[in-house]
Length: 200
Image 1 (cartoon, helix red, strand yellow):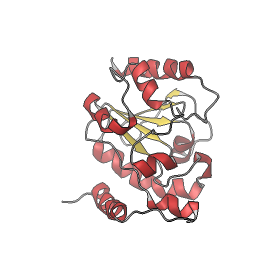
Image 2 (spheres, rainbow, N blue to C red):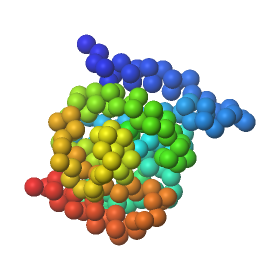
Image 3 (tube, rainbow, N blue to C red):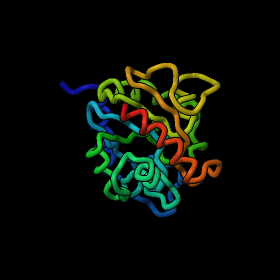
Image 4 (cartoon, rainbow, N blue to C red):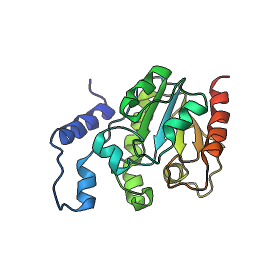
């Protein structure tokens, strides 16, 4: 039986098979052409959830491939991976019981280009995904996606009081280079604290 998550992904893969870049095309429409595939499997320790793909990641098909994004550095320096994974080898993340997804599929140059409606329309599919893949933890990178999905106005960093589809929720600072409020050392400190929790 094909479950809800895989039905939708069959559609997305069909779109991906026809994707192409048009010269002088509208940037909004072009962002819909490129789809970034999840890196997930059932019963992982952690699925890290970005807000949405950046344009470069969506175009080249690899998570956090933008030069300024610090995700892969943080994963290594905080203890999640024994070496720094290159974005082009992002599927190696699964070897460590870790996965990647996004809250919203549409790629943008900045996450604040997304509308409330886009988060709302993504919620049920996202719930289906997390329910089916059943990670021990789901980590939202930045507060925006979890605020939109939980409908909570105030979100604190760290462990959240309520599970999400059976998974323990953490919210940690976004590793994007645009997030200048957190240095690399700051990010490593936050993620190291979470890593310690996963080892208990």
